[in-house]
Amino acid sequence: MFTITAGSLNWYLKYFGLPLSIIFTMFRLCTINRNDKRRNALQGKVVVVTGASSGIGEALAHILYENGCKVILASRRIDELNRVKEELLSKKITLPTEEPIAIELDLSNLDQLEPFIGKIYETCGKIDILINNGGVSHRGSILHTKLDVDKKIMLTNYLGSVGLTKAVLPKMVERKSGHIVFISSVQGLIAIPDRSAYAASKHALQAFGDSLRAEMNQHNINVSVVSPGYVKTAVSLNALTGSGEAHAVMDKSTAAGFSAEYVALQIANMLVNKDKELIISQFIPRLAITIRHTIPCLYFWLMARRAIKTT
Image (cartoon, rainbow, N blue to C red; front, side, top):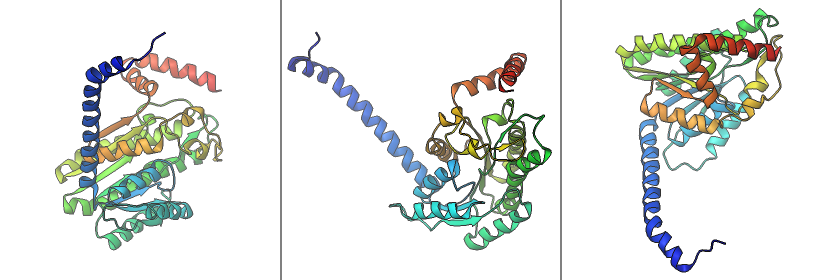
């Protein structure tokens, strides 16, 4: 039986204690430096977050507020937005912060977009960062999905984000400053069965983001596209079925996904670093992306097999 004596303990401390303490100290210093860098980069920024009433958007609101941002919360659910706002105000923040603003917004109603942005400019004078996070998912085969569902998802996920972006761009171009972020999905890089409307909207968002990035480079405006994999949010509960009703089921893959807080932290770091693209995903979706672009015939076969299992 193995026992630790006083002598052996001293030996372990002598030869392993110092290196471990050095590693721990270096880790702490790196963490402190990263936090300081994030605060310095984000403090005082006016940031608009759509879909801020839950999930990634809510988690982003918290981390941005904690880093001194003036956060504009937008969503269809004003009661939930006010809840998020009150939770932010209840935080004990050492940095000087401004009170968040909660504004009701339906991304699928394109007539609301310019007045929404105009109201923020009137109130805050500027918009430094627009995070297009709001959206809705889809569960259903193409054969049994009504066209109205495709239209609603494309309106919300794609045209809503495009409309907001077009509304903020003129003043950003005038100031030669700004950052546009699109929260896409791994399904904007690959497509799987029973997600056609959602994947199509996210593919469109990826393409728009790439075009926008090229055009805005000359104006010193950053454009980032974030592609998360599975994240533990209400996305599958709120997803639309082929008939347009709520899916109302928590998918196993979604339940086992990254926390919204973890994803929000990665996005905040991306804002600081001004990364053009960020994939936050588990191994299998990353592998699927690689296969789709390197061995497409294998990817097509795998997706056909998956489609049979889901019918």
